[in-house]
Image (tube, rainbow, N blue to C red):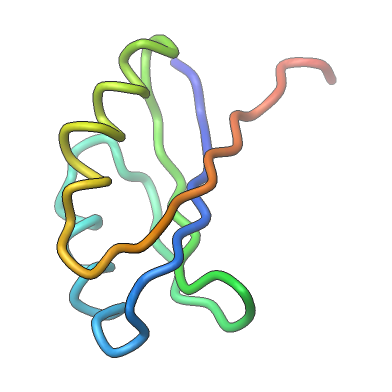
Length: 78
């Protein structure tokens, strides 16, 4: 199982609604509403990079009022 983090920019008026949508997805571990250049930080789990791409393209990037995402993948180099 791989772990990643999404930094999301969305319409600020809809960040609570978008957070609720994301929290219902089975691969989402945690959603935090934050202040700064990004509106949300989302922790996700996935099996492969292709699985991650599919989840992003089919589920997350189609959410209304979501403007952009930055994906960070946890490194195993520890």
